[in-house]
Amino acid sequence: QVQLVESGGGLVQAGGSLRLSCAASGRTLSTSYMGWFRQAPGKEREFVAVIGWWSGTSYYPDSVKGRFTISRDNAKNLVYLQINSLKPEDTAVYYCAASLGSEIPTTRARYDYWGQGSQVTVSS
Image 1 (cartoon, rainbow, N blue to C red):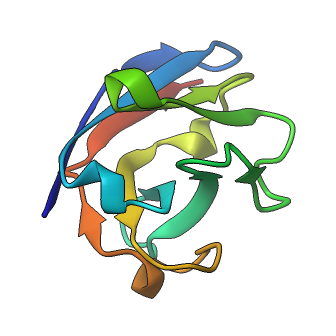
Image 2: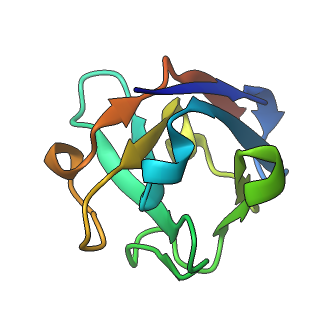
């Protein structure tokens, strides 16, 4: 089992920045990838970033590339999501997720563990 707890969400003005954190505990040695998703009201959960837990290789969809940066601190079992130039459409609950698989996961089904989510609200 891997437990994930997100933090760092809140209310931010458009154009601002925010860094979300995800604390991982449990069997983190089994983790291959850590990802971030977001879900806005009435919408599907959307993939926004992934990083290889051991390799550090990251990947982003085109929709957030250039504004979102994922990073990790293996020693502290932390994963971060830096979001710059925030827009009102970034408003969503942001979820951290862990994958034990061998291939880079970009869909919800490829992840094995999820955090409870952290609300990010961007005001215009």
